[in-house]
Image 1 (cartoon, rainbow, N blue to C red):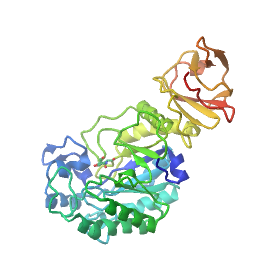
Image 2: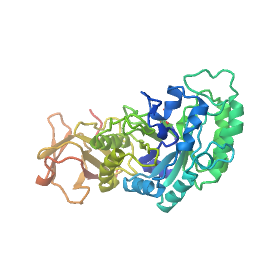
Image 3: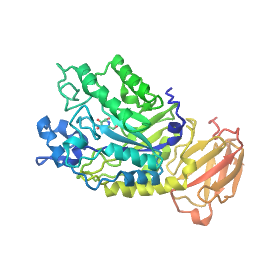
Image 4: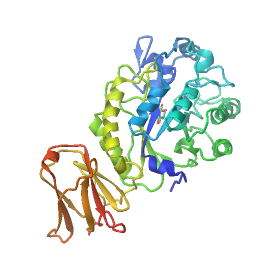
Amino acid sequence: MKDTKQKWFKEAKFGLFIHWGLYSVLAGEYNGRKTEHIAEWIMNDLDIPVDEYEKLASQFNPVKFDADSIVKKAKDWGMKYIVFTSKHHDGFAMYHSQCSKYNIVEATPFKRDVLKEFQLACEKHDMRLGLYYSQAQDWHDPDGFIAKKDNSGKNYQAYLDRKCVPQLREILTGYGDIALIWFDTPMGTTLEQSKRLVSVVKELQPDCIISGRIGNGLGDYMTTGDNFIPSAPYEGDWEVPATLNDTWGFNKDDHNWKNPDDVIRLLVKINSRGGNYLLNIGPDSLGQVPPDSVRILDKVGAYVRENSEAVFGTRMLPPYAYDLEWAQFTGKPGKLYIHVLKPQKKELYLPNIANRVKKVTLLKTGGELPFSMVASCEGDSVVIITLPDLLQQRQNYCLAIETEEDSPLFEPLA
Ligand code: FHN
C-alpha cells in the first residue's frame, strides 16, 4: 500500500494537470498531416526531425498566457493542486533552464519563464504546485529514450547526468516549494537510476512526493493508467490522470469533450474508491485554455464548491458500497454523502445503509429531509428518504446522511 505521508495529498481529491509546450504550436497538424494520437506526441508520431521541430520555438509566442487567471480558475474549480509540464517528452523546458538552451526563455520570442509565473500565482492563491518531468523520454537529447523507436546505442546514463538530474535540481531549487514531481514513462530506467532520481528529489525537498511513474515500484503513490479508474476501492494513496477530450496537449481538431455531468460522476466515483482525480487542460499556442475546458470545469467546479464537504477529505468506501446509475457515494467517519446524479421521484430507497442514521440533510443548504427506516423482507434495514418537491426531477445535488460516529456507513451484504 502506498503512503505519501502527506495529509494534503490524501485530502486533496481534485487537481489540475496542465500539458503545455511547443506541440501547442502544431495543435495536432504538421505540414498538412494530422496526428491521430495525443497531440503532444506529434513529433514522435509524424517523425518530425529534431531540427525541424526545434524551429517551433521561434514561433512560440503565447502572449495571452496568464498564470494568475489559470491558477485562480483552478481554485474556483475546487482543485487543490496543479501539475505543470516543466519538460515533456519533446525535451523542451518550459522554464529558464541553465543546462539546456532549449527552453522557453532562451529559444522563444516570448522570453518569459512561465514556471516562475505559475510559482508566483500559486503562492498568491495558496495552491500547491507540482511539476511533470519526463525523466526517460527526451526526443531532443541524443541519449534520451524515444518510445516506439530504436534506442540501441544510446547512453541513457549520460543523458541523466547531463540533462535530467541537473534540470531536476533546477526545478527543485528555483521555484519554491514543489508539492510533487510527476515522473512519467520510465522506459529503460533501472532500479539504481530510479533510486538516484528519488534521492535527488528528497535531498532537495524532503516533503516533495513522487508519482508512481518513476518506475521500479518506487513512487510515493500509485498512478493509474491514463483515464483508468480501478474497478474497486483501492487502499492507500493514488491518483487518476485524466483528459477532458482525447488529448493532453492542445489539438484544434479534437472536439470529443466529455459531458460535465459525466466528469462530476467520474470525480466522485474516483473519490469513493479512495483516489484523487488529476484532470487535464491543454492551453493553445497563445496560452489560452480551450473554452470547452473552461465550460466543462465551470460546471464541475460549481458542483464541487457547493458540495466540497462531500469531496475533500473523504475516505475510501468499503467494496460492498453502492455504485449506482443514479447515485455515487462518498464518506467520512459518521457521514455518508449521496451524490444524486440522475433525477429521482419522491422517495429514495437505500438498502444496506448502516442503521444508526441520525439525520439526513441537503448538503448545500443544511435543510433536513424526512426519512424512515424499515426492515426489508430480506431482513436488512432500508433507509427511505422523502424528497421535497424542489428536489424531485433534479440532478447533481448531494444529500448527507449523518450516522452515529462509530457506525459503519454500509452494512456488508449478508
Ligand atoms: O506519454 C505521456 C502522455 O503524453 C501524457 O503526458 C500522459 C499523462 O498521463 N502520460 C504519458 C502516457 O501515459
